[in-house]
Length: 328
Length: 245
Image (cartoon, rainbow over the protein chains, first blue to last red):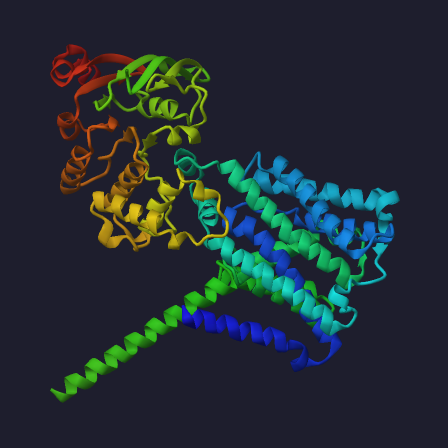
């Protein structure tokens, strides 16, 4: 346990040191992007990894939050109102998604979330009086909490880092809680859970709401990071990209979505500078992950490390018995 | 007062009548054995009693309270627990966590998203005690996937007992067990205190017969014979159903 605490402390210090270590606004911005997508992936992972419900409509949830913030700011409201409104907007849309999609599980659940996500995308595209259609909405300023302007790459990175750490902590606590245990129970054996006295639907609903809350938070980070939102951010490809982060990193693990978000964002931004068909690269890497580590990068690496460790132990043991055998 | 009463219960799947006007009255503390050939509708009757299926007609009463419209999950809170013929456990979790989930199902803690489950000492103690009753306490921390079939059967029973039910429904608790395992499970079921009413489905008459106070023979969804052990064994209709004479 103390090793885990030490590793967590080292990781947090490393994240704090990032702006000093790279000291270039472009790369610090990439780090901010990774963190905001990691929050999104953590949110989706609650459903995909812990509830066993694969959603392909989550870009609609973060998008609803981002659009609400943009709309409220454009209407002349302050940042506090806009952020509160964004969270509320995201959660209202999440509740609607949950109420409709949770009538089903499995493939049907995927299809309903996909359809709902497309509806939100369609609204962003066509409800021009609110969303400005294809042109999107620009945001002219970032908030300045406690008088600290988030305009520079470094300050925005630290604000995002704080939100990210809070999200990771919330997920870590949630996963170990009785409710988290109930949620994984509904994933593995819903029928038994019902017979044991659990309200399976209601457990899934609140998990969906938690997932939607994190997605909305990432949507708010998104709108302040890019200072712009337009319909493509809500499209099916955006939802699929976040799902890719979760699955490639390792669904149902705490670290997996974070690793997956880093992988996808780095490939998109860094590799695309050298290879114009960066999607091909992403696809190839995903195929490799599915072939060699179907459970995802984080659990896959743990598995490989464990096998290597055991093999080394066995070798040591054999070497030791051989040596003692020689002596006698 | 009856512990469990079933009145005029019927259920059809399309044109197939799987339960036809079944009546049962089980006294508190009774051991009732339900037998019948494959496809007799035994498990369906259990699913109707526990509320996993809704009946077309009839009523289910638990201690004289009509629970026909009470959802499956709420019946656990009213003191009804069951095991499954096909192992229905949580394979990714440890044995202890399986038992914990059974306890959590009846605890208001199950809605709590911030406490640490594995620090809930009273729940842990109860879970270990439940595993102790079936002789699995020493392997509580073993992943369920690494246990034998017989041990899984005992986990099923431990989870049902952990909920301290007033009425316990056991669906073929001996299915797939070796002779030694059968003997162990039989001793375990004999040790269940008499304040728990037990209704058991079992194929294997030899193993289950001496556990039962009364026996109900089901065939094609209908009650054919009901009575004491001796009455049912002696009844020519029992022989007819089982041997086709």
